[in-house]
Length: 160
Image 1: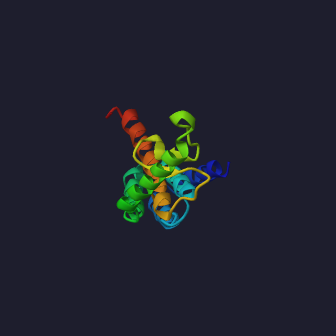
Image 2: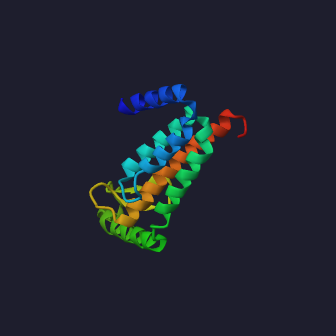
Image 3: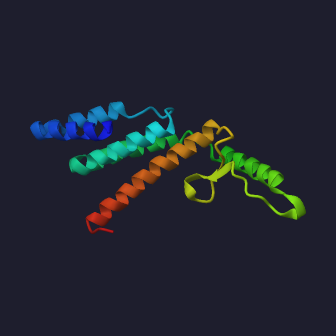
């Protein structure tokens, strides 16, 4: 798609202008979506930023420093106590709605566990997420991409 075409153009420009890596880093820094942008936009940009470091390995350290800076900007916006309170409300609602006949509990399809890990239980697609929960979800997505990428880098280099 368009992202692949953009990566080809970047690679071609750097083949012609190899000293352009720092210019590219400046462009990526300026283009990084604001912390209030959607989780999808943040994770798409993160994925593409990490992809750039595959063919421009000189940017690996600086790109990750940029990513960590942006992760911290999202992280400081999350109120962990409020997130725990929101989870408790969702848990109570699940318990109240889940009790079926004869004390059998039904599965509530309107909740999901964030990132597939226990701990952050959020309302599902039918219930709107608070800004706090959206920030947690955004952070989880970006962190997951980054850690998966780094795991691959260390595995490939034999360091893992």
